[in-house]
Image 1 (tube, rainbow, N blue to C red):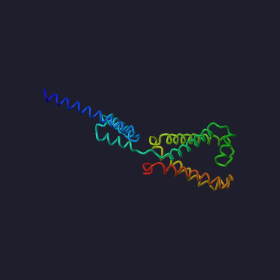
Image 2 (image 1 turned 60 degrees about the vertical axis):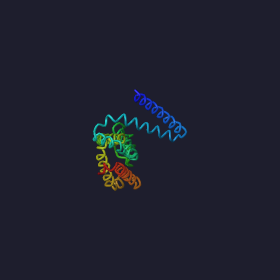
Image 3 (image 1 turned 30 degrees about the vertical axis):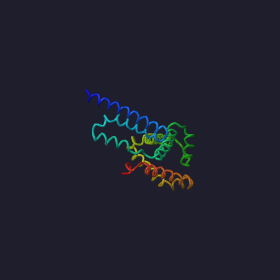
Image 4 (image 1 turned 135 degrees about the vertical axis):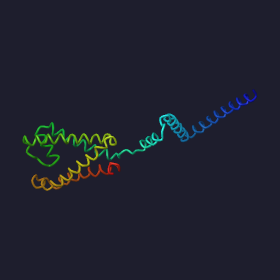
Length: 210
């Protein structure tokens, strides 16, 4: 009986000392806002660890969780470049599919610096090409929206931009001689494609370039 009373007294005294220590710590932390902030962060981390401890039953789960946590997001510049390219191609596709011939001719002159005669065969070819431009624009929009999830689309985007860049260089002299497109207008088209291609490639991350 004496031992039981002694144990009980020691336990109660320990509880009282713990409560006093906690109040003292909180009082000191309240006087120091940085200390209070550190205590709150530690409490938050403790609660997170205790909450998720039951879900991490195996070392593989721990590794998977750590990998998914530290996986870097693509740079913001990558999303900006793909977003600009997506808006451009979507607008171009809508113009080719829906605009009347007179308005479409003005759009082509604005974009290419060329004013071709839009007969029935040319309009049909433009509508077919616009369907592919629309698909390309949708792919760019998805890549800009969720770069990690839609990363498999990235090689297709780079290949298409590379092909367009090579094609623009090949027809450079043709546009200048036959359609009287100025050198500055031609050069601007080539530089714009080059900036989009290299920009998307360099900001896509090492995984995409490997």
